[in-house]
Length: 368
Image (tube, rainbow, N blue to C red; front, side):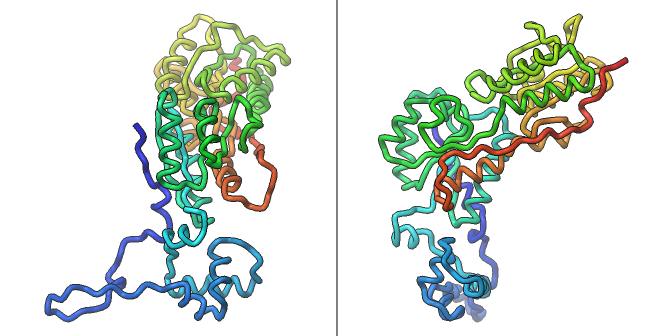
C-alpha cells in the first residue's frame, strides 16, 4: 500500500505562523485578522520591474541581468513573499511536484537520496512527494500511474530495484509521465538516468586491500535484485584475480544491503577455520554489521580484520572505527535526477558521476 509523504513541504515557505503573522487586536476577544500576504505585484513594485521579470526570477528561467536578479530577490526577502504553488500550476502546465518511489532496505542510502532530491527541489521551487512501496507488488504499475496523475506530478524518480521492473517502465511510458532512473541495470538507454561506475569502484576497493598485503578476502553481496550488487561483485572479483588474491567460493556470502543480513553473513565468514583477513561488504550498513560481528568474535578492526564498505553513507563515520568505503555521490545523483526531470539546460539524458575511495581506520596492513 502506498503511503504518500509530501517531504518537500518541509522546506522554505512552510514555516509555522508566529505572532507577527497577525495584526494586533484589542483585548475584547475579537478574532485575529490575518495580515495581507505580499503578492507578486508588491514584489514587482518594490523591485521596480514587471511581474513577468519577477516570475522569471522565481522560476529560475535565466535571461535576467544580475542587478535586476539581486533587486527581485531582495524584494522577495523584504516582503517575505511566498509564491502560491496552486497559482503557479494553474498559470502553466507544471504542478511543481516530483515523485520519488523507492523500496530499499538501507535507510542510510535512502536518507542521502531523499536529502539530495529535497535540497535540489527547494533550490528550484519544487516539492518532493516520497512514496515507499513494495518492489514485488503486482499492482505497483497501476498505483504508480494513479499517484502521478492524481497529483499531476511533473515527473518520477525511481531507485533500485524499482528501476528494472519492465511493467513499471511500460506503464509510466504509456501514461506519458517523465521518468528518471537512478542506477538502472536493464535497458539503461530506455530512459534518462543517473549512475556511477560501480564495477570500477569495487575494483578500487580490492586493490586497496591488495596494497595492504591481504590475500585471503571475503565478500558480502548486496541484494540480488539490485544491478549495482552484481557490478560490485564482478569488479571486486576481477581485481582479486588480476592481483592473484584468494577469493574462495565459501568466502562469498549473500546479503541484502540490510544491517541484519550483513551481521548474519559476517558471522558465517568469521566462524570459518580459514576466515578472511579482509572483508568487502556491498554497502556501509553491512560493513558496519561486519565490524559489530568482529567485536562479538573478539577480533579487533583493523588489527585482526580489515573491513571496506560502499556508499559513504552517514553510518560510515558514526561507528568505531570509521569505515574505509567507496564514496558514492548519492546526494548528487538524486540532485542530478531532479535536474534531468525539470530541465537545466543540458540535453544529455545520462549523467555518470565520479566516485572516491575514502580511506579510514577500518583497514590496515595484514597482521604479521
